[in-house]
Picture 1 (cartoon, rainbow, N blue to C red):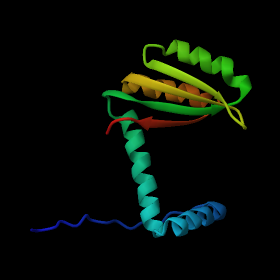
Picture 2: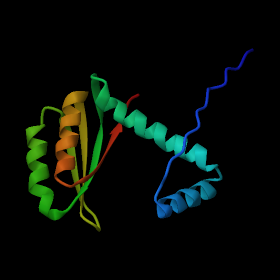
Picture 3: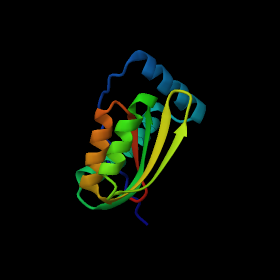
Picture 4: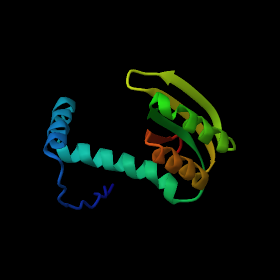
Length: 131
């Protein structure tokens, strides 16, 4: 049986010193090397954002943190995109409100909602529920 090795490519990345220190702490705690941890993070980011680059039917979660003052704007956007927002949950957190939106539909439409929510100043993350 022949095992094919993945081709690796080396390149340099500059990080803020405090971010690099936090990365090293996480790598140490997880007992993995820094490169493996960075590779895992980049793979997740690329997989998540791939959904915004390739048109397809998609479903996933938009998780966002906003302040109480943004609530009306966020709800207006949920209403505007009700064709793809299949569920919304609101939770009060320590630093603001957490919204979890289950979305399903064309990836282009999900990307539009993501971009509009980002423009409000929300901290947002898309989690695809399929690959």
